[in-house]
Image (tube, rainbow, N blue to C red; front, side, top):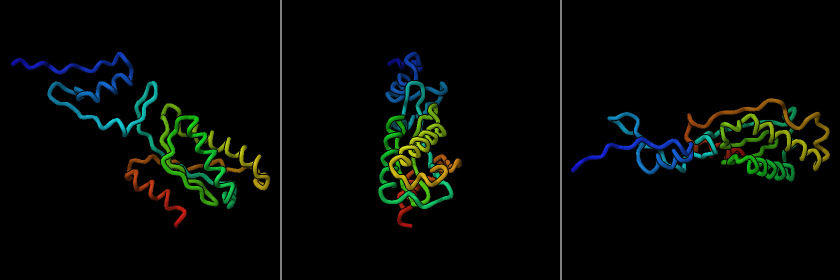
Length: 169
């Protein structure tokens, strides 16, 4: 019986073609070794990139005022969900505290996390200040600063539980 040599993956179909091929078999790295790829469910893909980029984001209202309560909180959650859906960012966890917001999100690295944050803060500020006149008393709804940490050092489940338990603490 003759053994056939493994075929190198065909990259002519771009990243998605390569992704499909790599999950049908193993990807040849070296003539004497192969590397199994992780399951497709742990990765997202766009036209030219396959990624797993999860971020924990936190930002605050101006002067850390406790204005994110009740109907403002509910409306903010829906605005964030709409924006993330529009730009194909996956919301993994979201908690709105009276004086800050925690967002756990997966976003295409070619789109950029800073661009997503700028869009969320800008549009949510405009919409919330139009709908809730008491927010117009602040010079702007959000501070210029925000916190970003990639999720990778700690398991995703631990970060998600941390974000969800913010209301309890």
